[in-house]
Image (cartoon, rainbow, N blue to C red; front, top):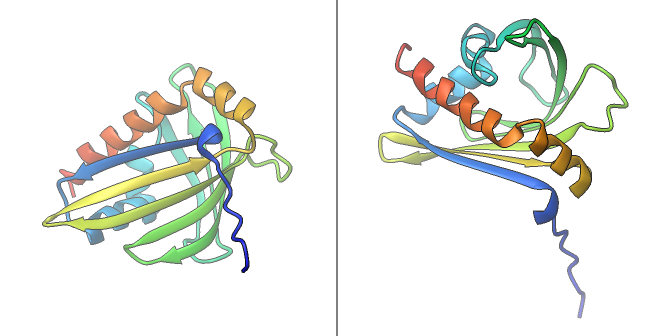
Length: 156
């Protein structure tokens, strides 16, 4: 008998789920079109400058989040899996290729009648990094980001 090894990441993950009052294809468009994502990405008070966004396997999304206090946060996302209107898998970090705080994200888009169930599953490199990110406001920031997505969807 072959034993299957399963990795337990519960001590280093954040999962945020939201039911959005919009069809799955529209939610995916808002998530993958730079014109739209620049309008809602990030916590309250943040704005974005999108430098590039190539949503395909191996594609890169580079952007700067501008904090309400004027601080700029360079970000780089590299897409590992792209299934249109269903699933995005990517690594999210700063523009430093050796960013120790980079984390792995899986976003799923599921039909819920005429609505969309969106799940954002983030896995950090260690429990200590997750705790550091929680102190930085990662959970509240994630919820604010999805609130902003909800508001943006109503304008589309």
